[in-house]
Image 1 (cartoon, rainbow, N blue to C red):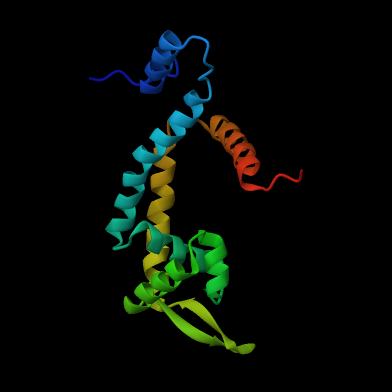
Image 2: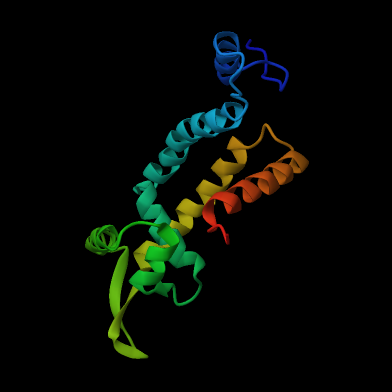
Length: 174
């Protein structure tokens, strides 16, 4: 039986840092301990997340668009621009995504009753059922993936990642 991982056990990133410290002792590579792990975690997490989406007949981008519509609340519709802001893709890519989801019967385009020139993208009943089931499994999967961290550790990690995210995502006022 394999011994469970503990924080004290070195990982592959520790080995890389050790190699750099040996070969270039004057070079500060401490940031690699964080950035390297973030990159490696993404590569480890992505297939496990995608497996859940695939189980529901979805790709990750499809889940992203459908989940955005679902969490927007009743009537589960947004303008293409609002979807664009939440997904950070080009307008051409968003148009393509909406077309593909509409072809599958997961979303539909509607005229905005408040402004007939504007189109709304809305979840269909099929889209709502699909994403509703997928999000339940997705949340359970994410909890399982984070099971190595207790609630306190998860809260600390959330806080640290939020700080890093804000520093990189928000424009520098200076």
